[in-house]
Amino acid sequence: MAGMACCFPSALSSRSTSWLVVGTYQGRTITGKRFQRRSLVIKAEVNFVNYEEAKKLIAVEGYAVVDVRDRTQFERAHIKGCYHVPLFIENTDNDLGTIIKRTVHNNFSGLFFGLPFTKPNPEFVQSLKSQFSPGSKLLLVCQEGLRSAAAANKLEEAGYQNIACITSGLQSVKSGTFDTVGSTELQNAGKAGLVTIQGKISAVLGTVLICAYLFITFFPDQAEKLLQLVPSG
Image 1 (cartoon, rainbow, N blue to C red):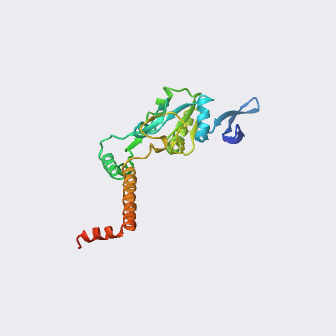
Image 2: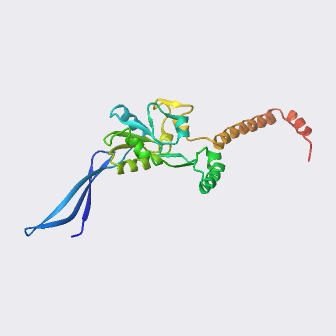
């Protein structure tokens, strides 16, 4: 008889759901009677919360904060007292294919957004296991919420059940919510490269244009004399 499996949802709370997985396997015949062997597995879903709920998980329920961002974003700003276990690490491999990809990356994403060239951290799960048991309560954080969700999936497969993530990541966190360490706010830790410089340049150019407009408006005669000094093409 072929194996069968059924799933039945069971609500645990308003923020998470558990799934009761019932697996039926091929039975054995003993003295004319057929017995079916069944197994029951409880799988808890990841708990996605906003930053206010995350703060309560830390203060009230004792969740430990695990920051899975890369080193550069972590150094710009992170929650005080958190653990840093990056899901991706800087890729310093020197094979030809990697060198080409790194060069392209550094001239585009790296240049404009300040993003390092990374690869999956092969020691991610093992590094976390060395610090936390499968029964630990873990709040995973990243900048946009994508890496923490991916990390949560890996940890679920490794047997961790009490996992929470901040929806939309640290970029959604209001200033002052957490005690932080770093040179900028948590929500700005993902901003780097020419994007930030471009913003400053735009602000300066905007100020210059406004001043020029006001000068022409209130001092038209002086503005006309200045324009006459400009050499014509």
